[in-house]
Amino acid sequence: MVKLFMIVAGLAAASVQALPLQRRIAQSIPASTQQWEQACRAAGGGERCNPISVTAFSTLLANAGACEQQDAGDTMVDLAKELGSDEMIRLSQIFVQQPRNTPNSIAVPYCQKAPQNAELNGLFQCQFAGANQEKFIGGADLGAPGTIPFGLNAPLNPLGSCPANPDGPIADGTQLVDQVQSPGAPGNAPNAPNAPAPAPPAETNAPEPAETAAPPAQTNAPTGGGGGGNGGGFALANGQAAQRLNAKFATLNANSPCTAGENACVGAAFAQCVGGQFVPVSCAAGTICAALPLVNSPGTSITCANLADAEDRIARTGATGGLAGNGAAGGNNGDDDSTPVPATTVAPEAEQTAAPNAPAPAPTANGPAAGAGGFKAANGQAAQALNKKFEGLSAASPCQAGENACVDGGFAQCVGGNFVVTQCAGGLTCAALPLVNSPGTSITCTTEADALARIQASGATGGITG
Image 1 (cartoon, rainbow, N blue to C red):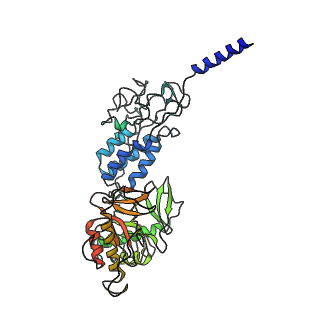
Image 2: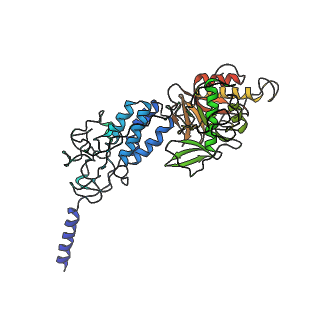
Image 3: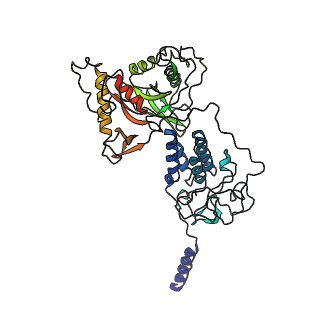
C-alpha cells in the first residue's frame, strides 16, 4: 500500500511538471502612448491629447477587443492629421504594433478589418516572446480565423513578428516604441482585395487646432466677417461664439453624448468628456461655468467665473443679449440661429474667485472701492504677485492638494503633493490674470500680450510680475 501511494504520488508530480507553465504577461501600458502624447501637446493638441492617450493604452489590456487597439490608432492618426504632425503619425503606427497583455502566456488574436487611415494599412501587433505563438486567446490554434493578420493568407514568418520588428516577437513587458524608430513597411501584408477604402480625414468643418494645452485652455472661434459694432473684428466674433456655446451648454446634462476630450459647462459645473460621458467638476461657491471671449486673439475659453464678470466680458466685445444672446444659438447679433457651435472645446480657464495660496489683494490707498478701480487694481496686483511666485516654482516644489499654479510656462495641478504640469500649446504661456467684476484671479494659458493687457486694464503697473 505504501509502495502504491508513492507510485501514484510520483505519477501526479510528473503530470504536474509536464503541464505548460501559464503566467500573465503584462506591461506598463501608459508607456506605450507617452511619447505620442508629448508629441501631441507639442503640436498644439492641448487637452485632447491625454484622453485619446488613455483610451489607446487601455486597449492593451487582456480583455480588450481584437480591433480596439487599431481603432484607437485611427483616432490617434485623425488628430495627428488635424494638427499636421508626422511625428504623431509615426508614433501611432508604432503603437498599433505594441503587443497586448496576455493572461495565460498564449498569443493575442489579430484584428480582422481594415483601418480607417491608410497610414495604418498592413500594420498589426507583435507578440511577446514568452507567449505560445501557436495557441491564441479564445482557444484557437494557429491557422484558425483571427490567428493570421488581416490581409495575409498564411501564418507569419517568424511567428510573433510585426512590420516594425520583423525578426520576431519582443521581450516580455517591453515597449516597442523604445526599441524601434521606424514603424516598418507592411511588406507582404497588403489590404485584402475587398477591404474598404480608408475614410478621408474629416476636415470640412473641423475647428482649427486648439490654442492651449492645459486645463486652462482655449477654443478657436470663427473670426466672423462683419466685425462691426462696439467690439469689431475678432472681438465681436469671440463674444458671439461664446454666446452660442453658452446657449448650447444650457441644453446639456450629465447624460448628454460627448466625444473624448470634449469640454463643456453642464449646469453650473465645468465638465470633461471621459468614456463618452460628461464628468462635472463643481465651480467655487458664487461662480458658474461659462464660455468667455478671449481678449487679444480669436477664440473663447471655458471657465468658472461669477455671472456679472462673464456678462461684462461678453458685453465688452460688442455682443448684445447677455451670456447666451437671449438664449438663441446665434444671439441677437444678426447671426443665423443655425450657425454651428464649435464641436470640440479644449479645456477650462481654471478661473476662480481666489487662486489657491494667492496673496490677499493689495489694499488701495483709499480703501477697497477707491483708487485705481477699487478691487480691480488689487486683482491686478494679486495676479502680479502670483506670477512672481510662479517664477520660483518647479515640478518638485511642495504643494497642497487642489492647488493650481504655473510651472515652467505650463499649467500645474497639485496631485499627491507634487505638481503635475500640462504644457500650454505653442505661443501660449500660463499666467495668473485679474478677474474683472469681483475680487480674485484666474490661472490660464494665454498669450503674453493678452495677460499684459488684462493686468494693465486693472490699473496695476509693472508688467506681468509687477
